[in-house]
View (cartoon, rainbow, N blue to C red):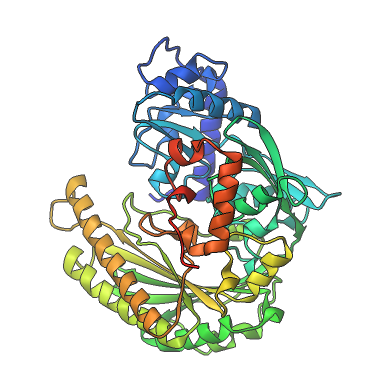
Length: 521
């Protein structure tokens, strides 16, 4: 049975109770240098080795198993962890550190085999300050919990669309939201960051204090320190209107035309959000298109969706608008699926009907290739088209700027991402090794599709450099895609606040600014 959001919340609650009830096992010498360094300090009670009762709960859905997990409850404990691991890392041993908020990113970003994972899940408090109009949100919180807490005050913040996603990674990577057309990226709404630096110092970063760090953190990921708290701009909120219109893939040309028209709407339509989801269903062996129409002011009859509403729905599919609170909506869809997937990263394209139609042709070829590889009943696909109007760059600039710098290439844009979710081989050889090989081949097909799209986009001058970091693949240069101005700023900030490169060398997962080479002027 697929776990519900409620069951996952109860599991998290049970794990939290275990933290309070189960003491860490005493280890005079575990034989694991970074773990031993932590165990001889006051941090020992929050260190969990593989024989800890809590260890399985800390690594339930990952292919990597850390030597130990350390689970801080305060910025001060994070400071102690950083300085202890920094000093323990002076030898020639081959181990590293991973930092995890919600764990939504790829394995190397939030977990690792050889070393220590800092699990920030207990830094999860949300506090609303009505006088300041801000919400202080712990980096280890999940967006559903954040929205639940803030809804009691009739306010919310710009955050993740899926309630299960963690706060830290989404904000530090930019953060596309249902409110992006109204409020900008999630990172644009960070008024202040509480940050633990490599030297253990706990600092604030905002427009008046450490302003260079403040700007670098808005899209710069975990290159400069560990953010323990975000102070986010809060605003009054109403219910939102949601329509999930399911149409046949045979109508994809009409969908593409409507997407282009929608993305070209001006800022007066910023209450309207949209995602196009193309899914291959192994049960029907066919693709369908979900047109997710979201009006953030609860206006069910917005004319922004007129072109979509003219496309006939699949027989029996409801097109009745729902009026939902943000917590309700964040809890209606989940990121869940098989333990292996083959996503090949994100692309950003100009809002041009030619390139979007080419994308759909390439998607059809991908489905054909996957059918030959895996069998028609053994995979699912999820392809998203997400509008990114040019005026979102103006919103970011009005709020102090960010690293994504989407305005440096003019025009309205579309974020494109496609993933493959295998459901088995169907050949009686469903063991992990065989499936892993098929995943690698599926990934190759997906990456090759993206490359063809990139080449065609370049040929008609419809390509955009940006590779949206939360969706990006390890082979992509997400930080470099922000452009020279942002790269130079991030390199300068990293050198200033982490001169010895702890977050570049010891925290080696994720996208590192030190790996971005010289860019063309």
